[in-house]
Length: 463
Picture 1 (cartoon, rainbow, N blue to C red):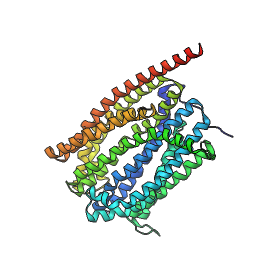
Picture 2 (spheres, rainbow, N blue to C red):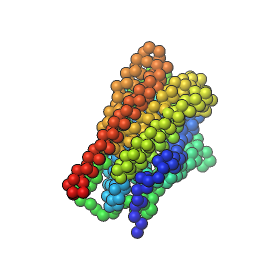
Picture 3 (cartoon, rainbow, N blue to C red):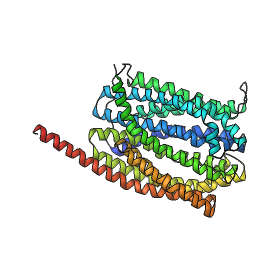
Picture 4 (cartoon, rainbow, N blue to C red):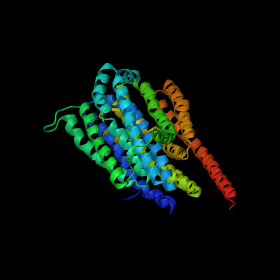
């Protein structure tokens, strides 16, 4: 019987390992972002109202994805450390318990989501005609939530082994499925009915379902990471406690982003539905632009976890240094490309001049801070695995609640929509700089504690 893979990120060239693992994840993250861009592209062909409705759903969908991602990061952190320690039984137990926990959370979220569609989207500023379109999409999307949360946890468990190719391949298959189904179900091509926004939601659920089944098959039959032995209640609670200790603060920090987007959406909504449509498209373009950084963030978590479990702090420092340098270079490249090609990119999604002007404004202002925002994302990913989730949460709270929201209100009051976007660029730069110094301090302290622990054990054994 095949056992779980041994820790394989604790030896060899750090730079080569990070590149080798990141490249497949780039395709996977591109797939995730392309998933949303495909919906945006086809829904944009229906009209500005439909595009505005889809934009309103973005912060809510992102909240659910953030919860799932937080749970997945918690699972990945404890699983990768167990792999680094060579504890196969612990790996199986943690993987299985994380999947069970995700199913329980799905049940709760589906009920809450269906009951709160009206009040939440009215709070975000949706008008009655837009709200009716939102319902077409969200009623279906909520019922398919299990296909979002469980695969995200499962794929993080697979990545904890150091395998980034499989999760990437799973997501690419889902994107292809979504791309094929979207036009058929949205516009009613051939024998398919014209379902418009409901069709986009159905296509999303079907495509996500492929990731659900494939990730479970991989975890069970190839990785042998799922256990069918019924554990004691105490054992399960211990697993959930360890996963949630990292997962909940991580989910909380990730939820801060869509909550902030929801507040900013309300500010932007005061400038009209065209501004909201353009803002929604801009956010998706931003996610696409940061795919390589997000891929590196997904890689840095198992890298830090396995090396932390093995006590290789020299590799942690080097990995962090190389990752930050890459983030700054990538951020500069994206700024140049987006600033130069803002108008033709905007024209791909809608032909309304006001929508296009909003997108162009965003792409020529906000990307200034992409490099330092990448450093924040990388730093918080490392902090979570290093068992410092509260530090990561504090940085995100500082960035969004203490800085961005107040500055966005001030910017909007003083110079209008450009002030809202300029505030975000400033906040990206400030929080990214702060995260660099915080992570450096955490790594120094953790290394000192580990050395003291080793000295203490040696003195006890008389070595």
